[in-house]
Image (cartoon, rainbow, N blue to C red; front, side):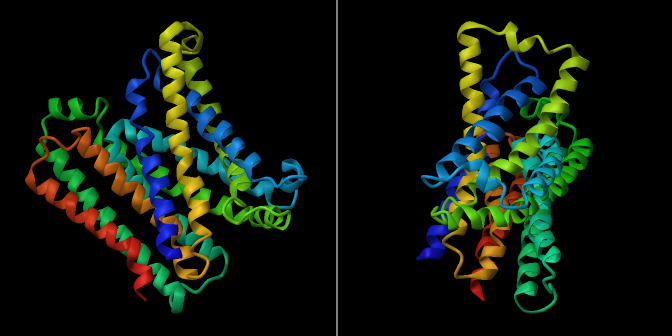
Length: 341
């Protein structure tokens, strides 16, 4: 029962993350870099800070707990992850919600699951390590099939249909950006591992295991915010779009801020759900180690559902849709694969 509840909580958070790019369509009169920075303030600062403060037990100080060890490494990994988050947003721009998230998150699932295990000295060729490796391989197989479906989609659609579905569609550029996003985004998982002493200190202070990791998430997302803010401000200067923040006023400003806040809150829900869900998986070490890959697989599943709902696959052909469905089925199987042994 605990395993099912843990997976359900992770799934709810994943659905929130996969839905976070939908509000983008309601933000008007801001360039991409302006929107990305504003939603990042909510996604990487405001909501993580609120979560971290809520996790601190009465009588304790957040800053004191963050001094337990590993804070700097968590922020550095977060800055590296920020590069992935930045290019992740660009992959949505060039490939759309469905295909962009599929390639990025699939790569992120593999590296984010295997790198912490390798750094911990785990043997991936025997026992639980081999099972973990096989689970990642199943995940990558699903991603590969979805990627093939994306190539069929690009082949079958006219340029006009591509632009109608995704305004800045560019397959080759988008795939390269998405692969880079996936590799760098895996640093988030390494940042969470680096903050293990902080998580332990929060629990020792009396916090529930459900929320003990939230202060660590704040450190990682803060590092990511620094990277993204530097890039967005650079783009604002380069494109002369810095005045957009103040140029939008009245009802439009309110609407933009609300949808940026909604996008940020939905994005943050994935890691809030991951931390809570992981606390129910402690009895199954392999599933616990595979939880990062599970989150990424669910993100791909839900993002493709959104892609279908937003008609990004319209006109792509029956073969492409069939491959998409097959890839999603493999991903769904990968979520439960570790629990079968």
